[in-house]
Image (cartoon, rainbow, N blue to C red; front, side):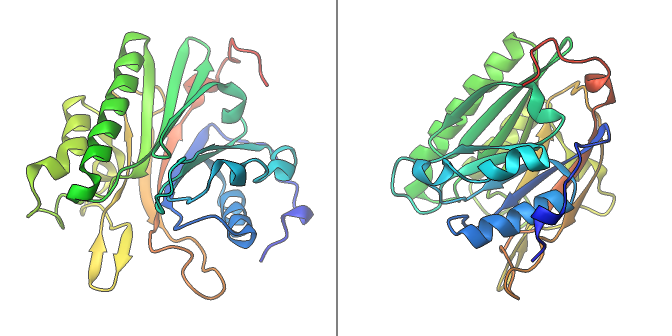
Length: 273
């Protein structure tokens, strides 16, 4: 394991900023947290969306607090107050993006929204963890979509641009025999003319992000709203390094590189934190 204390990671030097999305299969142990931090820092992410953290509010009070200033990033968390096992989302945000965060909102350990203010530009970054198909999750799915719609309506009225990263637990090809309701969230974003960056930049079809005994699925997505001011340049799927000689998670990491040069050309109006 790499010792980050020996590395003083400089602020993000480029306006080409890598966004990533990963289902982490739990972050309760300190060693798993450190492994993820190593991966985040050494892979030069500007933003990393985390799903299935399984953390409670008491767990997140001190996560990465000592490393924030040393490595020029911030961590944000949304935890469930219930005892559902597979809940919890988070966002790790590197300099310069974290200096532009103005407001934070969350919902039930399944949605986390950061609002960033730039000069004449406002961007919402949303981490989303959609439950798998099944009647047991029906009400959670409907409530999540309702909450997301309220955020998108607010963004539209107030001229925010939006990027959504998450484990959607939906694969249009592998799940083709599922009911139409299973694809409601994807249809919603398509109806709003959001761009599915992995599908848009893939010539041979999107690569899977979830691996299990009998096959693979594409469950993780990165979407952006129409006219998003930081163009998406390319997407790819990469692996998180093994943890104790075993896979860290059964998901791969979906990444998209965005060009933030127009957003960062002039300092934000907001006070830099």
